[in-house]
Image 1 (cartoon, rainbow, N blue to C red):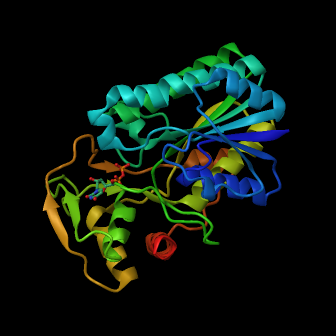
Image 2: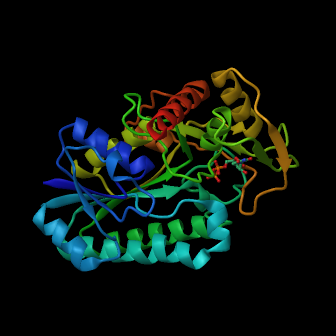
Length: 328
Ligand code: UDP
């Protein structure tokens, strides 16, 4: 019995593979290495380079490795990129997920865990947002993920497949043992960009919009440490293997930090002032998105351990320093 992790060479996927291997699971990784790095894959896991849209390949992997659970990370994750390339996002995140789900159903894989996103809510009417609130994404990224949730819902009703979709809020930080972290070149996510600026990899940081109706005019996000997010996947795996029914869960801490709060945390961690410049709003950005994660805490018994922005930023900065020394 083994776990197939798609996108296991990417940021969150590589942390999941490390955690699964640490816990003694057999792991096979499928990644096309378009953004992932082969060195980020735990040495105990088997890495297969290929595409989740290749049904012949995924069926073979499932059979050969007796896969009983798929943890599906592979996909495109940048909101502004999805605004300029919607069809690319529907292909990578929706069409190819449909192929993977089809293989899972055909091969009789009973458990499926899906990386969904807070972007499925769009601009929620109230925060913290619960799983039962309206699903009105405002970016093709959010819509592409929501469509996959809906495919899983319908497939799980028709077939012997139970799924958990985890709606991630803003994931940041790195493996506490320093084995992996956010390594993508040309990163766009705030904490990584700010850490790069702190280390001189960029000369300044832009703040996209200071005219939102929030306490300091910048967008509020619920930043969650990658180790806690990975923990939620392990909890979801135990839940499904223990007979749990299909369900959707928010993964966040329930606290909103502004862009300027994050800038302040990075400045504290690095011990310097960043060159911060005002820029226009970025298309597709909701003003405020904060999780109510009561369901994950009660049903999955999820217990986050790194709920601290300074700690998240310090771990992201430590990883950024590591990358700098690797590449020099
Ligand atoms: N952001 C920013 N400057 C940057 C990157 C991001 O002001 O260089 C803002 C962005 O507009 C959003 C928040 O930071 O309000 C979080 O964006 P990120 O891309 O990290 O994650 P998202 O919420 O889009 O998934």
